[in-house]
Amino acid sequence: MQRKNLARSALLLTIAALVYFTYSYMAANGSGNLTLTADSVAFKHGCLKPDSSCFRVIYRFPVPAGHNSSRIEKLIITDYLGLVEEDSKAKNIDQLKQVLVKNAMSYDSSYVEFQKQFGSSIEWFINVDFSQVFHTKRLLTICYEQSSYLGGAHGMYGYHYLNIDLKKSKILQLTDLVSDMERFKSIAQKLFTEQYLSNPADNTDYWMVNDGSFVLPEEYGLTAKGILLHYNVYEIASFARGDIKLLIPYNDISDILIDWYREELKEI
Image 1 (cartoon, rainbow, N blue to C red):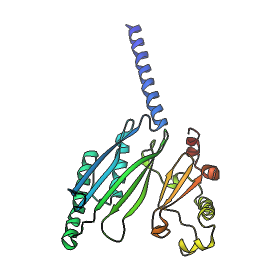
Image 2 (spheres, rainbow, N blue to C red):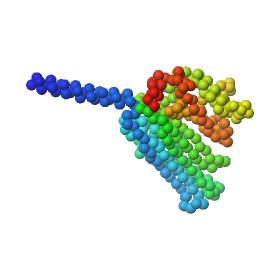
Image 3 (cartoon, helix red, strand yellow):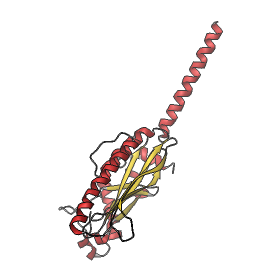
């Protein structure tokens, strides 16, 4: 009997050790086997003939699967609702779809009124798509591209980045990755000047804050080569200049990267 109890205790300890090791490994590696698939909501009004009145909406979004996917899904949903300027709440993908359908229908009401007033055959559209631009065991960066025409002088387009710490299930800010933001801004300003302001005449096309200091963009993304700063149209220049990208190579900022981020980059 004593031997059986000892054997049972040893087996339980072995199982407990395996469970602990598995949990610790998955926590340390962050994403585990996390993958993304695409889902979408599509809506159209009219569009019966090539020259008929038409309004189209396509909302495409990522759906995570694998380790810790439920927490990552919540981050993606909340961020996506903000992206499409939707105040409603959604707890899962099915609810997100319901919200997006209602969102599209609200724009459709505006389109119908526009048609009544102007009788125009101009096509209205909203398109949101995404791509995965960076993924390590701990980090995930998704880039959304938006384009639309809802009346007015011209259409609009823009980019939004979602940078996620998969280990902590949180959205990352630049201050989570860089230890000295003033130094980072100084390096970015130097690179920006070299790439975009080499001609003195270009200075008139860009604005900075009143004291003349460099302005970081609202959007940034993580890549294998560096931190990508992405200025959307109208953010620092005219619409004609388009969106502006500035890559900050990791070699230029290696000494001001947070330790855990620097270590993570070694796995690339």
